[in-house]
Structure formats: structure tokens, C-alpha cells
Figure (tube, rainbow, N blue to C red):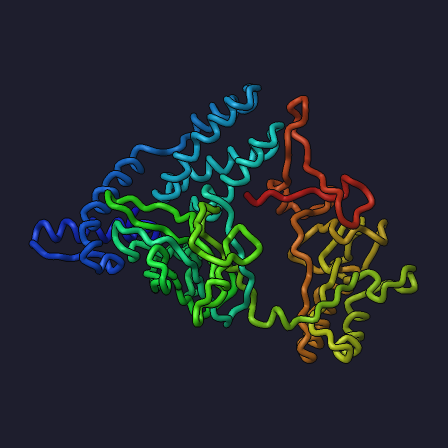
Length: 450
């Protein structure tokens, strides 16, 4: 488990290794985050904690039998308090399943909570959404509260700066910063949890509080980067931190610049602290040039916005307008309806010509194949020519990434992915989607990739 946890067990594992070597060789080894003399006693405490976690991980799992029992229970039980009690008990299992990387248990739990998204009780549905987020993200942090989100771009400097209460147990050096991110080597490896020692500075004339700052530099690629402050305690315990104020800048720190996480107005003093939501956050990092995009949306069937067959669009017509868009300062085109759709007809494979198109204006979201562009608009060759001309003018092209397909003429590859639910009689029914530009509610059906 320790070798495959991608950082989640690093502190405990290293402390276990150091503790055993210290006993055998009479050395004084310790984790790099426990460098101070006050912290070195924690090596043995965290080693004992690690052994307890490993023992529990061996005992905790989620089986097919439990899944079937829970499915029956949540179907038949009517009392909300009883339902909430049972679903809350699953938090214990989720924590250890995530830590032990038990994929079989994790998949069964996902199946359960996906099913419970359709439960009649809203509180059960809400709990299921939270638990699914935990299982998909791979960490249980959201059990403590939501993330404080900052949106930025690749290449921007990232830092986290908070005023925290100082505790006398270990001085101010018992604060650790955790960063949860995907590997930077473009591999398909699971996310990595890294451990960092914040730079701790005392506040002028305020010994009860310290400034904790972490310089993260610039992230090399777009994605989600989650972080969290935790505090170590004697006995090998690690707890979330709830009391603290965010600092937008700490150059020549002025208390007026210190902002509580859950209060919109600055406070005049940090002398009064109160428990707030857990101090954790998420950086959403977009590609470097994202903020420079001037995006223009066009509907592929009528790119000029005028109705009628005489104004019918095509990839060629959009291509011929690229120069005009470029002169207008547009550097990104979002093309709605570029994917292959349910036209009610086929293309002659020998001639490549269109024939028997019963529907001339199908919904742009009634997609039959998410890997193909519209044959009626010109097919792949004309689309490639559009992209070539757009690149010459440094114009990005965006197309829809739809979560639905046509309910009547979808590609056979989607057959086992169509989302279904049980109606009042227990009969499985397709989950149709009616929002968006659709004439009929049943025109599209959702896909379920979970």
C-alpha cells in the first residue's frame, strides 16, 4: 500500500521506517518535516499510527454482498433518520478504501452512490454526490467542507498565505501543507499527494498568531491542484485546521490586509479568532493563453445567424469567413453543431454523396457519433481545411464535448453506455435530456461513463 499510495501514506511510512531503524541501530532518523527537536518524538507516535491504519485497512472492504444489501435497504427503508445513519456509516469504509487503494471496493461504492442519485430523499442524494466526489478525486477532504477556489493560468505564480493560531505543543512548526496534484510527466499515473513545510513567521506584537506561507511557483500544466493545511499533535494525530485568516499579500504585513475566509469585509484586528470552515482550497489552472481568447460562438447550420435554406451553413462557408473573423479581432471560434448528428439519412460510401436526409434541421446536440464531424456540413475533409485556414490566422477552434447522443440513431458503441433509471413500476427507462436546442424531450439520451 505504501509504495502505491502516490504520497498519501508518505509521512507515516517514513516515520515507521525511521522508528524501526532507530530501535535497531540506535540512530536518530526522522522525516524531513520533523526536523526540530520537539518534533522528533512524533516519529514513534506516527509509526504507531501507521501500524493502526495498516491493520484497519486489512480489515475494511466493501463486498458485492454488502452492495446488494444496501441496494435493498435504501429501496425499502422509509425512515429518513435511519437512512442517514446507514449512509453516514459508509464514510468509515470510504476513508480506508481510498487509503488502501482497494479498487474493487471503490467500484462497488461508486455503483451504490450512482444508484442513490435517484433516491427520493434529497439528503440521500446530496450525500451521494459528496461521496462520489471523494471516490473520484481519491481524497476524503470534502467531508470536512468545500474548497476555496482560485482560477489562474499556467505560468502564473501561486502562493498560499494564512494567519493561523500558534499552539504551544510544538511551537509554530507543527503545521503541514498538503498539495494534491496530477503527475507532471504526462503519464497516466494516479494523482500525487506531496507534503510541504510552510514558511512560518511570527506576527509583530502578536505571539498568539503566526503567518504561514507556501510558495508554489508556477504549475507547468492546466488542471486541478487541491491543497490543505493540517496540524500535527502528540500521539501521532493529524487534524484539519479551521481557524485562520487569508492574507492576499504579506509584504510589510498590515493587519488591515488580513481577511477572514468566511467574512467579506476586512477585520481591524486578528486578536479575535473563531472557527470557520476548514482551511483548504483548489487552484483551477487554465492554459496560459486562456484569458487572451476573444471567443465568438457560431451555429454551424446558420453561421451568419440568418434562418432559411438559402443561408444553410457548411464548414466551407465558415472557412471562407475566417479572414473576416480575424480582422474583427476574434481569435477563437466556438462551433455549435459540428459533430455528426441525427439527420435521418446516410452517406453513400461509394460516391460520398448525401442521400435520403429526412431531417434537414436536427438538434445540434442529437449527436450520433462523438468522434465524427457532420457529414452534411462537409465531413472531415472540409473540416480539416477549416482548421488549416484557422491555424494560419492563429484562431483556435472549439467544438462541443457533449454528454448526450441521439436517442434514435446513436452509434452502436454507445449501446451499453445509455443512462437508465427505474420508473415507479421498476421498469428500466432511458434518461432522456430535453434542455438545450431540442424539439422533443426524447430527442437525446444521456451517457453514463461511470
